Structure formats: C-alpha cells, structure tokens
Length: 395
Image 1 (cartoon, helix red, strand yellow):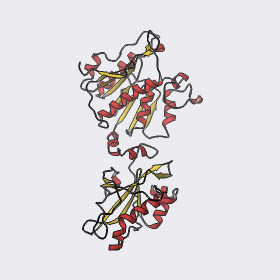
Image 2: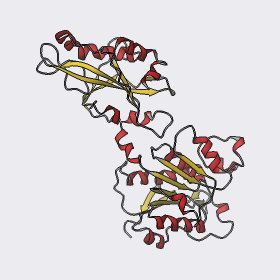
Image 3: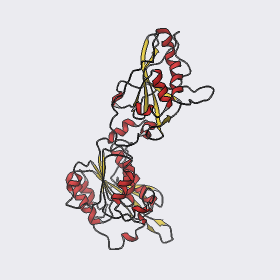
Image 4: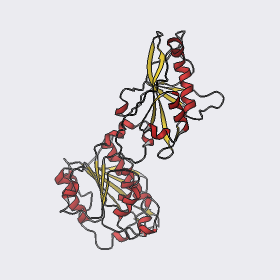
C-alpha cells in the first residue's frame, strides 16, 4: 500500500528516499524507528503516526499539524523535557498489522513562520529534529534505517479508504459491525435511506430486497441523483449500480420476500423491515421470528390537517427475538392490508423518509454499542407537530 501511495505523492517518496521506516495502516502513515531520550537519558525507540486524508484512491494530504507518538515523554540531552510539544496523553486505535505501535500521546508543534506544514516531508522532518535530535546527537542513533514494513492491510468492505472513521478516531467502535449481516426488506422511500446509511456502515454484508420498479416519484423520496436511464428498472438494480463502487458485500435482489424465502435470510444478524403492505409485513415477521433474527420495522402516516399543514407520526419498532411475538400482538405495526387506494394517497416526503430511516439505524447502532443506549421501550413515535419522540416504555 505504501509503495502505491509513494508513487503518486512526492512528499512520501522523499521520506522513503531519506531512509525512514514507513508503512500505511488504513488512513494513517506510520514512521517507525524513531529514537528519543527518556527522563534518565537512556535511548528509547518509538514511532510517529500521522493521519492521511485521501483525496482519491492514491493521492493523500495532511489532516493538520499534529502527530501521534508511541513512546513516553521525550527529553533533551540535559534531562529536561522537550519543550513546545503541547498535546498530551492520547490513545489511537490502529489495525492488527500495527500491533507493535501503541500510541501513547499526541504532539502539536506548528512552524513559526507559516503556522502549517506544507507536506508530510516537512512535518516528519520537523518532529524528528525536535524529538529524535537529542538521541541522534548523544547516542549516534538514526531514524534512517531504510526498513521496509509493508504488512498486508486488514480487509475492508469499502473500496475507498474509510477516512471518516480514522479522522473521528472511532476505528475501534466501528469494528463492532464487522460480523454483521444486515437485511433491508423494501427499498421504497424509507428503505432507500436505510440502505444509504447502512452502506456507509462497515457491516460485513448487506442484503436488500425489492421487486418494484424505480419511477420518477421514487427519485423525489430517495437519496442520490436522478438518472433517466434508471427509470423503469427495478429498485434493486438501480441501487446496486449506485453503490457498487462504494463497498463490497452488497447483494440487492429484485424479488419480494414471502413465506417461501426463508433461505434468503440465512446468516442474517439484523433486519430492517420497510414495506408498506400489511400482508407482506406479516409474512416477513413470521420468517424473521422463526429464525430468531432481531429486526426493526418502520412506518409513517403523514396526512393533511384540517387547517392545511401536514401532520402525522413516524414509527420505529424494535423486535428483539425474546419479545417479538409479544410486540407483534401489541399491534404497533399493521399486518393486514389497508383498503385499496389508501397507501397510494399517503404522503411520502424525502426528509420524513430520511428521518424515519435515521431513527431506525441509530437504534440499531445503539443496540450494537456504537452509540450510548439509554433507551427504554421498543416502539417509538416521532410527532411532526412538536418534534418529540414518545415510546411504549411506560406501558
């Protein structure tokens, strides 16, 4: 990976040419073999870690002027701590291929004249002079080892580097999704937004199902741009093409799940039910409950109020395997078909579909420990009128 980046980034190529022990771990540049003096004046070795911001697949730029360090507090030859480093104790999760690099602190030292480093070469050289300089002078130690550390990268479901996760320093939390196989049943207004959110979540696999065609009105309540050539194709085909260049493990099928489709859910660890027909929902519920798969069902019912503006509720209901039958019996979700024509006049608006989907995906991520979970209850109703969420917790 590093050699590929070095061939497209002059500053990385200059670092390698000078002899630094360089490697790439996801969206981080690692510089090993950095000597420094500890408080007793003894020689120690550590590594620098700098964030990489991917402009595209092969070009990278800096995130900021800071750097991370896997060693203790560096000292000068007279025993005093190196000054003007700012920062402090810090932890940063790296991949398994960098298990030898355990970040302990961050440093922040801006160039006095410009306030920022022009490139990675200038940045590393500056921090080496400050931190490694005393050890280089006292112990004749050198960071220019020309050591090659080109470990195989951890497999990723994404086809581009996930720089969002590394920039936010939530790599360890994101790993909680690594074994998840998520099913999305229905790719209408809300289902299409659920897909958009889950595509950008590092779950192992996504399976989505919808047999309906993509028409103009669908473009007004789903993410992404309208491509004329997509009209008339099935929603599964349309979204498969849109997201194919973003990630692996994406299986979208142009079919409707019914009681004969149980095998399509083999291996699924969580499901989102986003269908509009009660009878279809009932069959899907039966399959999920029989397989012990936890799932969230969504629904919405906006309508025109008497005085004109739109009113209504958005519903998100979580069905854990041990309480699914009880919650189904409570009647939170319709499991019978509404009279012909009611759904056809039901108001579907992009921001409401997106919000319904967002609440569902946030709840899923709470259940997996990604977000703090102080939720009580399983059925949640968002009221457009006052923007409040009510739950069945007190029931």
